[in-house]
Structure formats: structure tokens, C-alpha cells
Image (cartoon, rainbow, N blue to C red; front, side, top):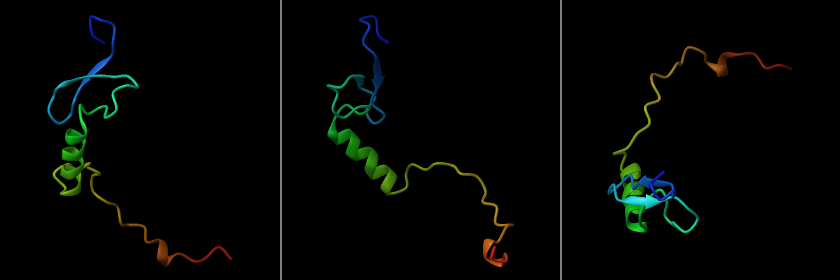
Amino acid sequence: MTTTGRPETKCPTCKKRVIWNSESRWRPFCSERCRLIDLGEWLDESHRINAGAADYSLDLYDREPNN
């Protein structure tokens, strides 16, 4: 929240201030350009969500059917 009482955030791409309201079409981004830059970074795997190690100890295909 700013001193004017309007909620704000920073654009994740360029860090420009963005007012958080329904008129901010690209929120949380400041523009379509910043939104597309971010999408491109996800698509080329520059951004990732760390899921941790996978647990493959349970093999569902080895189980008997419930029939």
C-alpha cells in the first residue's frame, strides 16, 4: 500500500511500480512487453519451480486391480 492508499506492486520483469487495480491490464506486469518477456523466460526454462526429488518407490503398475 502506498501513501496515497492505492495498492502497488513492482513489475517482476523491470521493477517499475504498478498500481494494483482493475485498470492495470497487465498486472502484475507493467506492460504486455514485460509479460511476454516473463513468459519467454518460463518457456526457455530460465525460471523453474523446485519440486525436490521425485519418489519412485511406489510403482502403481505393479499393483493388482481392485476387481
